[in-house]
Image (cartoon, rainbow, N blue to C red; front, side, top):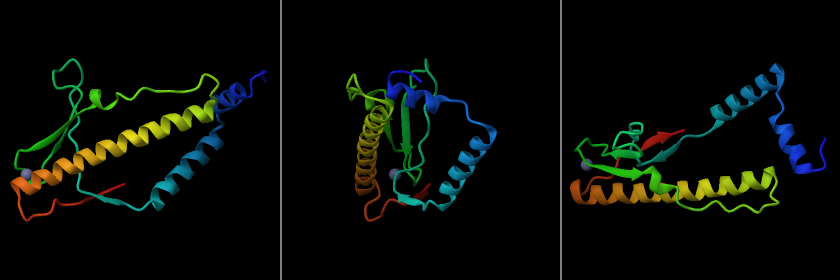
Amino acid sequence: MSADPNLDDLLDRLRPRSTREALAEIEAARRAAESREPQRTIIPDPELPPLWPHPDSGIVRFPCALECSWAHEEDVHDIDVEPISVPLYAGAEELNRVLTERAERRSAKVRARVEAAVREHFARAHPGQEPPQRDVW
Ligand SMILES: [Zn+2]
């Protein structure tokens, strides 16, 4: 127990869990994953980039689902440019909230950009054809 309740909260989260607690968490996560409904997306399966120092490291490719050789590319190094702004007095929950909201904003921007690129590609290269959808879990 320290004088700082935020530190106590953080230390409690970092406390080693018993095997029973860990198994209960895993089981709860498994049940939550099973009950989740798939979402449909036109975003193709991404090709993950080679590791640094390869010149293409950081470039995620989204190839056309019709395999026409076109691909939309996202540079993951350019995606993460928004500064992280957290008040000095922020506790663990505030820090978690700020980082989660930032990640969700970034994810929404990337998703919108890739979807727009796929739609534009289909309008130009495959006119009259809708981009195929796939399930995402
Ligand atoms: Zn294509």
